[in-house]
Image 1 (cartoon, rainbow over the protein chains, first blue to last red):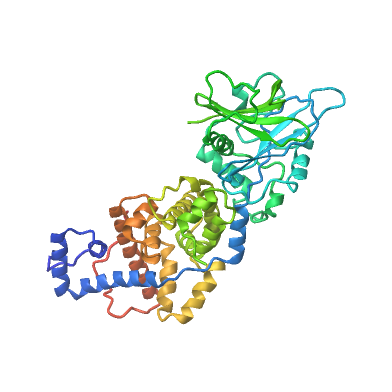
Image 2 (cartoon, each protein chain N blue to C red; image 1 turned 45 degrees about the vertical axis):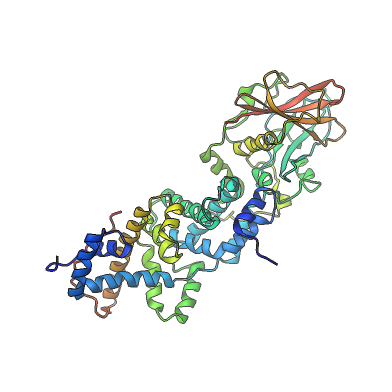
Length: 301
Length: 202
């Protein structure tokens, strides 16, 4: 050991504390008598010292601005289900939990076509940004945007690989309404799309939070899942719509009134096995009759 | 007014406090930026990675379990975002930290710090070592994390962190020596015929 030099990788291991006691002793004994190797070790320690002397680099203000803007509630207004409905109104729904978590559930306009043809209801849900930390209060500033977004059927992008618009008035088919469980890949893709986080000149163009609810932005399946989870996490209580009977076998039923425009509507969330169902119920929730006018279903663990 | 702890800010964010996450971000922005800048080696990549990471943290805050410091959790997300970005990036060569946002700060500091040249060389040499090694070195040697913290942040065993740091330091020492040699400034007392050998195996 004392005749030949110690490999620098071994010296680095020594410096990093990776050698066992016996080997450490051997190498240290060699270092005492070998200036070359001692210098090698010193160089490695100099590298560490130089690295430690590097101080934090201040984040440029424009970078901070763009990152902050990207954290605004994502532009996420999309149709989940379209079903015929006779009412004519714009619903703007905000469901507040006791924990101050605001779930933005936006019911698109319900347009009555003069020809008597079936019209559609767009059920759209705000992105999870508003689930986790509402930067804006869904209110009048959002309404017009939403109305514009949904005024032209088909003008709003469908979610990526998720539910397809359905004009079928029959009870919601789980196959068409089902939302896949959260998928990290698709979620991040949607996030990137909604936040403009991919590199390019369009970056950082986010407007104020209030204006971020623009048409055409995708909604992640994770967002929908969270809507159900937030509501299902609350104590079960079908107190907002007692006249609506949830299907046999369902659990964790919970209903919330939807402050609708002239129409008595509630959102009822319940579980059927591994499926969470959110039914939009119209009618007189105190006395009945009630009708499910929209629904979304998605699997839960 | 007493400063609210990081984990409390995260809890408030999850509970719907719309300012909590922003406070958290602003508190640690320079450190996170430095980590991203040095791990990616490029300001644009750093920004993209950091934006991905902060969105991720913003949305997944509820999954923070409190078994590590919030800063460790954030570092982990940032480093992983940087590594993801590096992997998905095409074969574009990494550029030294000499342009845009990182440059002026480093340059400013160079005037003030005695080891001006050394500091700059280390910063640029850092961009030339393998990603895994760089990530470990950024956390341990630059950010001053303990090996255990870095282990949690990187999601690899402590021994792997040490090993990556050791290999990275060897590589950096070689790069700095080569650089000095190119400039005809043989560093004092540095043996030019030592037992150095390539050591970037991970």
